Each structure stands twice: as C-alpha cells, then as structure tokens.
Length: 558
Image (cartoon, rainbow, N blue to C red; front, side):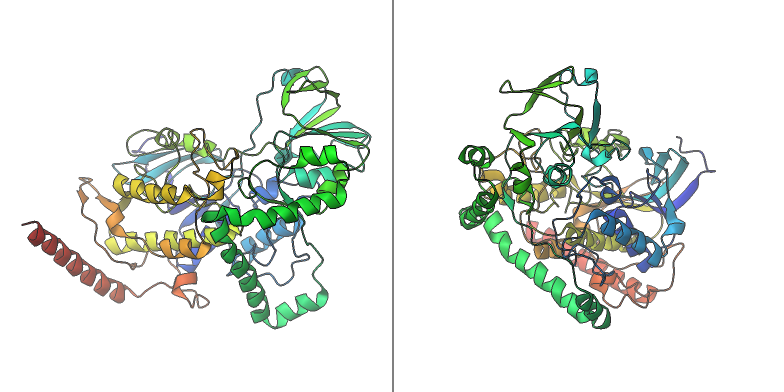
C-alpha cells in the first residue's frame, strides 16, 4: 500500500461489516444523500453475527419488535422472541429494500487500513483488492470473532471440535457423547436443543448464570394483520417495550440492591424444574443478578434435569485423548466438544488492522483499555469511527437503539466535514476522549456490573468495564445527537495544519449525492440533507459565535 498509487478506487466512505451496524450505516448514508460508499464484508453473505451463529436453538433474547430498526419496522415477526433464521431474513430484506446490494462487496475481508496523512484518507487493503476512503466506519461488532480457550491437550483430541459461532452442520450429534463448554447465552439455547438427541451431554460450568423464564410465543395472524394495516399499533408496542426497559436501568446503574426481587424470580424459575437440592446448589450463582448477562430460557433447567445430562460444576482443565478433565478432577469421555466460550469483545482483532496517524495500531492505542469519544471516535485515528464501540453495550435492552444513536452521530460527523469544505479530517482530541472516558468510568463505579461480585466478559484484562453503557438509551441518544467540534481538531492539507474547531453543524452537498429521501421527514431520525445556502449561513453564524467566545475568553483571562 502506498500513497502515490492513483489507480486505486476511491470512495467517500468505507463501511466495514454488514451486520446491523454496517447495514444501518449504509441505509443512513443513502438517506443522507451519500451514495459514494462501499460496505466491505469478509463473508459471502450479509448478516453479521446473525449469519455466523446458526447453532440449534439460536434466538434473540430481546423482543422482536424492539430488535429491529425504527426506520424498517417488520409487522411480520413470527414470534415475540424471534429465532436466528427470521432475524437473518430481516437483515437480507433490509439490504434489498434500501438498495444496498450495489454497495456491498462480499468476500472482501479487511486485512489492513492505514491513515495517509498527506492525502487525508484511509488506505485499505482487502482480500479482494485495495481502495482508499475519506472516512471509515467500522461496524465489525464485538460478537464477531469467537474466542477459543487454550486448553492443554486440545490439539490431541481425536473427536470433533467446534465453536458455537462456527457450528458444523455436517456433523451428526445423534447418539454421540458431547461436551458443552460454557454456560453463556449460546449454551443455554444449545443444551435444550441437542439434549434429546445425544447419548450423553456433559455441561462444563465454570460460573452458573442467572436465568429468567422467556415468555416466548407465536405472534398471531391477527396481530400481524393489525400491525400491517395500522402501523401505529406496532410503534406503540415497540414504545412500550422500550419504556419498560428504560425504567429498569436505575436498578442496574444506581441501585443494584433493588435487584433482589429479580433474583427471587430466577430462583423460583430454577426450583420449578430442578428438584435435586444438590444440583440446585451448583446452579445457584453467588453474585448479584445482572453482574453477568441475565439469560432468558424456559427450557434450560428442564434440560439439565434430563437423565442423560450431567452438570460438571468446574471449569475444563485439560484434555487427555478423548477424556476431558475438569478442575475438580472429574473425568468425562466424549466424542465431540462444543465451545460456547464467547467472543473477543475487549480485544477485537480488527484493532490490530487499523494503523492511525502516529503509525501505531488501534490495538496498541487501546492496550490499557478501549476508549472512544462518545463510543465512536478514537484519538489518533482521524476520520475513523466505530459502531458499537467502547461502552456502548447494554445489559437489559436492544442494541439496535444504540446503533441508531451512533448512526445519528455518524451522519452529523459527515455533515460537519461537508460544512468545513475541501480536503479535511476530524481528529478526536485526546483530552476530549479522556474526559468522556473518565465520566463513563465514574458512572460505572456504582453499577451492578462493577459491584455485583462477578467476573464477566464486560471487563477487560485490567478489570475495567469498557463494554457497557452506564445509563439509559435515551441518555445515549442525547449525547450522540450531534458532533461537538470543540472535541475535535480540524486537519487540512497540504500543510496538515491543525486549526481550532468551529462549533456548528450542517452539510454542504457531497460528491455522489442523491436528492433528499422524501421519507426522511425527521432530521433527528432520518437525517434530512440541508440546502447549501442554509448550511453556509449557519456556518458563518457559527464562525462568528466561535470568534466571539474566543474574544470573551481572552478578555476574561486578561
């Protein structure tokens, strides 16, 4: 890769990934009037984690009508908690409905991207070729790269081994002795699905989860007809689901002791199916509910009560041939091992492939913990932003709400670049990133995720929670509605001189623009493109305000 090669394709925006974040970004770009973009996808189809996770029983633990884009409601969800096939089909439908196929490059894994300080652009190397982009939107997601533990003897295991996110559908589990490693969100769906067909199933549990019943049911044809004919009924349903979860946030973030009642419900859920006191004791967590992800299942405990299912209440220590040895010395001989051991969340592999303005990778910049301004931009990486970035995860609601908030931020970021005019980049100020991170971590101190007495995948190697947002989705929406240019440095060419930012918003027409989408009636949700004259007037006003503020500060200092 070199900055002097002018033959490479150049685009305004390169989006990495085609899951909810990537497809949502693509839709938002088109609705902002930007068509000069590509979506780079490493696989041979869209869908992200809902393409990769196709294990038996795979389903969402967020209600269907909340786990969808606000701009693409689906009145035909089959169940209140839809399964993986329905969610993947929904994402394919979004790609078709919004005309995204022409922008999507399948089988195009990003191998490396480097910031070209002279050209103010990103040089991107993919498995299908090279290109450059003014702006990169990374939407690879935290649940995209499976984490396999380093277990002594694993390489010598003679049977079948795979991760839940890379399910081998060609391997027949019927009549096999199977080990399930882990008791997370995937495992509690897999265990009830395969228990009836395997000879024996050994579940290796390091830490028991809190499990609440999942009130899943088929959505009736009458309900679906009503949502199609009267869309406001579906909007009301979504609003109710959202509101209930917003009211729960206080207990998670400020008053964890209020979660005791929820623990009682979880224990009652267990007692209904697990009659053996010794088994109940092994399945009862010793930490506050909510500290680790709360799981939803009405089939998990009944499956553990089956005569062909054994709970090994100890982590896997080593493997000797076909025998799995637990930390407590328990030995179990199996034909197949399924790892439900999660993903690289706080150490995302994509970070090793992003080289910023100072010549170091994002992984190196984040070696002491991930942090990004408003969960989107990192210091030292101009014109680069991420969707579902640090501290944007949720413990009780729909991540699609957070994705849409970050799409608002992305849209205004591009408007700001358009307003500034010419070849320009925005670089997050280190002081702004640090200030945002300090505020987030200060709020995190009293949350159940930090005080609940557990070790979870929310925490990084230093024990810091760099994953979850310590507030409501409404709060995050307000924090990311617009870009504050005071938090950025403006970088230009050819001198790459960094100048004080001008506070304001708006966008000049961008290369490859479409007329404003007539459906985009709400600027906060759909991002209506503004007329150039209006933008320029607003920019002049913002410039005058900034100069006046600077003058006032100068006089105050004097």
